[in-house]
Length: 255
Image (tube, rainbow, N blue to C red; front, side, top):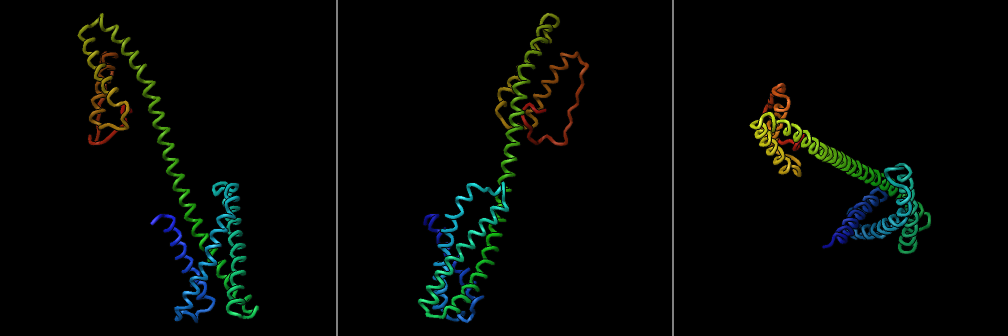
């Protein structure tokens, strides 16, 4: 069964329930008469479905011009007014055919019955529209939060990528300057420096596209980086790394 057919059947069921609810308020004597229930159900669909279709058609031009997020009050007032006008028009026509032409009741009975039906219909329309509008606003609010979080995440990722691209060439340039001076002064330390530098850039190349890495892996990178800085500042730099636990993830190069 296609989604369109399911939607139609659900709408028909809703209209039957609403129609018989209205009929109970107007005249509850039919409650033990199955045939009257059937007539009310058919009448409810004949009234309700045209209202739904015509309302959807009539609202489209306003929906394009008046957005929920920009002017919700005006959108609500116009939508409710359109539904009430269409419901009044269709109810009067079908009630006239059913009450006057088919059941041959008096015009005064037709007016009385129609006004009672319209009053209950309008109350149900306002209630249902309030419920649907509340759900629609909740949906828009939820989508807005998700979109905002997504934009914030993308902004953070962009900042991190920019930071990585900025740090890498500067770090390499500084490291090569230090290595140049060490080659002449202390070849053994220069060899150690090259080893640490290769480990650092191996880590950068392996994890540059990862969103997260284990802290133990990042910690090794941080220790290698600190060793290079200690060579640069000749043991004047001392750093202690302490964590409550080691089993967690971090952003690569963030520490």
